[in-house]
Length: 228
Image: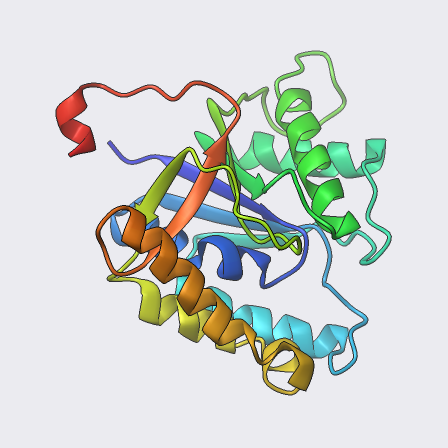
């Protein structure tokens, strides 16, 4: 049965970095996949809003998602506000995802922390029946957290997704953000970092490349054979 998945990102490129392989894998399986970026991620030392929009368009084409939207909130000063919650809640009501993904809840970047707080609240707001919101009430069954943190930690992992077949395309999507990772010398380490990280998670499940996800709630399985 085909499902609907929504990935909420603080800035364009965070979904690609954290779960780009999972996004591609879901699309290859025929599911509906959506991305909502909270901000355009600008200003940055070598970027502009216009550059970031073009880079995002190229990366989105590689990912193959069904729709990508931007909440047009302020980069660097993203806060968990009523306005932010309502904007995302409307997207949730219109896109009607079965599962929502947002950043891991431990991070050094305030925008990432705010995105997680906004998403957790908006998931709940989206189900309100008496609310001045577009779309019909909807509640996503799961909220999963992806790893794109600025903290030097090993995340608490609930499950790991094999992206060995999708890793090359994931890296292509990340490289679309030239202003962030190629023109900006300080960030060129990211390509080796992502490869090392995905190889580490892959090693844990005896595969070449993988991405880690976390869930605060219990996860339902149909049978133990499906885990093997």
